[in-house]
Image (cartoon, rainbow, N blue to C red):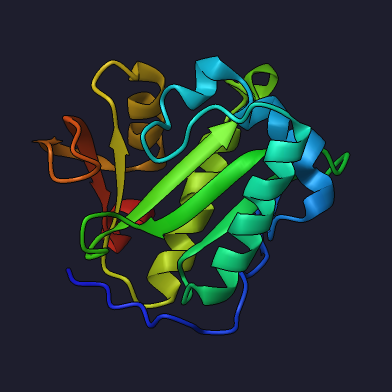
Length: 188
């Protein structure tokens, strides 16, 4: 599928909710909690080369400022979201639906959670909500790409309902595992 996204839409990521989560646009005052995810080398190592470990609070604010500006130029369903627990309002990570390089022909789903909330089903819940949003907006497939050694991300992709389709070096110039989801996978 070819996803053509105009350069500017003037929109920001739509707020999405689940039973336990709110996926909402990032705010600059999320920097401290975001640093707990993107400043953690054990998490950020899986995000490279798309993103390196964020060094400090000032750098995290700059990253968030960039993401907020980028969101204004993306056309839905593409976007970046803070993942917030509904019961206590705590930001526990981030989620994305972004065009994959090199040509932006495929839309990637991603999730990045603070280590202290791993294993609670939040990534699966957020991923399923992102997929539903993408399909409701007319997409017929979304992808997730993971490094072959990132067993946790692969397991989450499968729990979301994604199918493993193979490995490629098409994206980011790295050997990556590719998972794909279509609307029927979400309903099945």
